[in-house]
Image 1 (cartoon, rainbow, N blue to C red):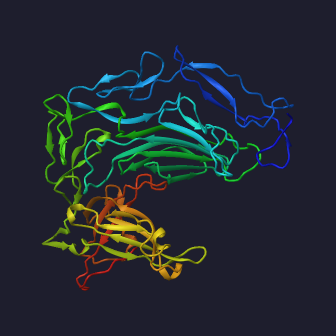
Image 2: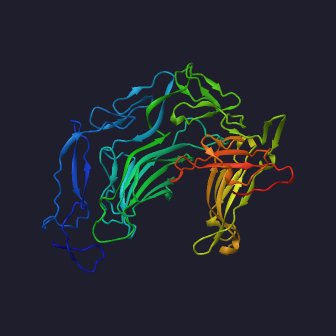
Image 3: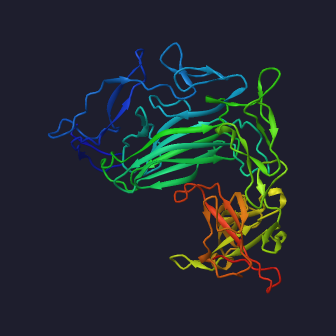
Length: 518
């Protein structure tokens, strides 16, 4: 037929000539010779006509090339399919090898070759108009990456989902550990866009609704992103790409794509291994994780407790954790899982020794910035909560998101989402502004998950507290500075946030002191 109509249309329109934006490419599975074929396909639904003058034709398919190797932890069996290596072995993709004595496999999932869609991944297309699933593939494999295919419309959401049944962390997550990390997912991606495309990364827990974690708008060069999993449950990780939020007839932006080059998930239950790590041998020949606060001696393989003044650093999924010294002005907790301040600090000066007591800051404190106003005149504050020392390093400051609670009657609604840290920040809207019974707190973020050290210097471990941001202090009493880093990774802070808290002693102003932002 020379005419066609979209669903719900009141009339038929003449079919346009096909262009290079109406087809896409993919690769076939490996054949018995270890070869794959490049295939070109028309994007569905096919509305264009290749029979019209100047219409683009589908490029010839069938060009063969060698198949990429299997993904790490997999190897080819008797046939051409890549099979997972059994437990106790590891692989770089070429063959399964047994872990040497005194080591154990580090389980996870790593996908960096895309010849077929992995069995625990699925793809679909979600309509950007009526939000119905279209039963078609939104992402296509392309050898060394997987990319977004052409949708029915440019405002469709191209969906790719990875499901992980659970995790098997090598040691229990400690209550007072600096990180509650159960696992992590790291992926390398790229977006090529001529308009305002968006790539969403979402996380779902136990088959519940996906929660957006990060969004990238516009073209983004090849980069890596890491999300830390803090709950052992069935998790789904979803990438959704939309070329444009505006619906127009036809396809104009098919060449705008998102690409995933690699996906790496650690500590996957029933996962595979690409390397082995040292562990403490048991009489039966198997391995056992070291007790909390113990590290494996690389020579003997025996577990040794970290000495005082050190802590166990390095997640087991990255290899073998080791003991590292605490930063200045800090001490290790009993479990050697972190370093903390015991609320005391000594400063030797010529002819005297100053001793500081910060125990008043152990119980926690909160203060707000000056008021800010939105474009519509809505007043808000930045609320900071901090707990700098004591408690064996446990994080006692908390910030909440109670937006859902504030809108519902007392006693009803979901519990507020709470962020616990050494220093955290939230946006606070007073109750009189919104007309609720309580103040509305939202967007809680952690600013300090790890104490780097306590010192009078302005720089520590790459974090700088510039003196010019503060009023001049006493020339003979230097400021004492607490330096922190946060685990939260954002687009502008790819290495995580850093926080510095300056404490200033003024003998002429006795009392409880004041808290202020620069």
